[in-house]
Length: 218
Image (tube, rainbow, N blue to C red; front, side, top):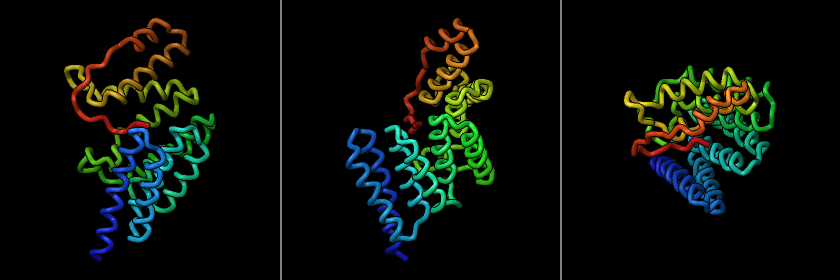
């Protein structure tokens, strides 16, 4: 039992290292570290670590434009870790890939699946944990998907919710990256509706940013 716990902890550490490596541009090292995490998870029989290793693969694929690769990685991870929170994140990544492929139907199906899973899970105790799914972030993912497939009313509604949740009472952005994309979404939907003045306002509006660490939003 102790050996399995050590393997699982090593897997979590490898996942964190892989994220840092990818963020700093060392993609080859990040993929090697991700594979090491998956190997440790397999040896330990730890489905959650394995699920996040697949989620990292989906993330890597998304950022390089390999959308079919995202879908394959997301489905492999969901099969491995169906009962864990990472399954929600995997559904979100898959939906983002379908949105970039222009498949509205699959976007709707996948977001609905993720939403149902999210509603059946307890609220996480520590949102600062990188490997915990923030329920508020699902609206952010859905907003991105709906904007990409042209569902402007839904995208705008979700953008407004993202800004509401991500802004302090004094107007300071608690979630600057999410809020910035929400404003982009409002600007894009306004431009599509012919409201160029509102589009410009959203494009030019600065963010009041706190010193808090931004979580990955890709």
